Image (cartoon, rainbow, N blue to C red):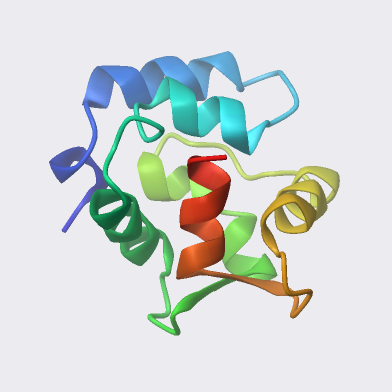
Amino acid sequence: MVMTDLLKPEEIKKALDAFAAETFDPKKFFEMVGMKAMSAENVKKVFQVLDVDGSGFIEEEELMFVLKGFSKDGRDLTDAETKAFLKAADKDGDGKIGIDEFEALVHE
């Protein structure tokens, strides 16, 4: 499965362009690509695409490249953006984002 199976390419591009030079805001980004309106089941499918190593978690190393999961043209997140994203989503403090934490952040 690829991201464009779940989301509209034009919405992905618009959201990526919005954060090209602006500090990344995961909640705003997820809303712009249409994820906030998605069912929990489909949000979890997006998570599975972003979970590159298939561990069931998005670790900090994967998080840095999260925008590339939406499009090969996506930029890398800065260290500060990566840490802020992790802090916003990692509710149990284990240093990684689980599927339920991801879904909760999207629908927050």
